[in-house]
Picture 1 (tube, rainbow, N blue to C red):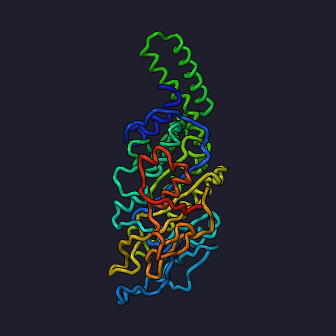
Picture 2: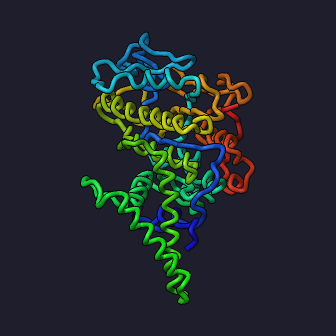
Picture 3: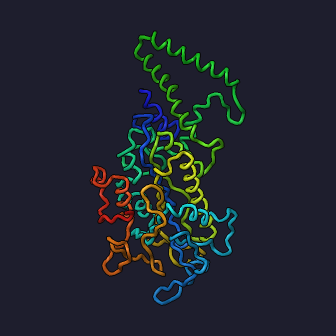
Length: 422
């Protein structure tokens, strides 16, 4: 096994992930100039409680009232620059503070909101696929897989997270990075300090390395040489693992924040450039207001933490973050204080290549998608077109330089190209 292949093997080995080994390629490559992180809000978020606020205006179904869309007042809708966003719902416990307000106010100048996206489905399987790949086809690889296949095959971890790859590339769980870095801590015992003084451990390591080197050059049996190659290369590749460790915080976080730290460290260290992860449970058919508050706080705090880590590593200006969900939720409450599925949703994009402080698309007071003029992106319900998940992904492919590529032609989105990001 070549030295450059060891990290890639370990990233996908059953020892670390419980899955089959990676295709073996380079362990380290020069940093790409564009990173992508896709964070999918699992289950379908309520956009009227986030970036398409409606307040307590009443929803009418064939002239019959179904009650207010939200529990907060329309007059309490908030604004950060050109972006309007919801307040927290009345009567909801929110011990975490105003995470939504902090998020929109901090990131407004790098954030684009796309409202009125017609996902064309309100079942989770298709909606999730459309969010992750722009198409409900079972055979369509996720966007992150296309990126990793086209640009990341020389990286140790072409794609971090969880994604359908269609066999194009390999994917590594963020947790695997934590487990792999433990391999470099040979003198550590979990919760019990060190096995021996560090200087003594280093002496033993150096002695073992010198002994291996001498035996390697004295050996003439092919099978023994092959085994020694594996051992030598595994030792050498600890440098690559140490490179990742050097970018991790002194005290790593857990949960979503920990995953974000691992992703940022992998990007900064040069072993990865693309991530696609899911977070939370936004399928709030009951007790929506309390549950959404908890879910969105975790989600937005995680995105905010990711951005802080990217800034700490000096690579935020090279990173695009994609935020979306399966679809939206109904503009009325059901009899369990929840909301059911609604095909119209919202996306948020931020970072490199994104025009900040912008809202593209809109919905009516009844949360129905408005059509847009494809040239001006202004509302044109007579002659315009609906924004679709495929249309958003066409724009993302254009941003990533994938449009017109072999992969783009092999996995067409079958949608007219309207550049929503221009």
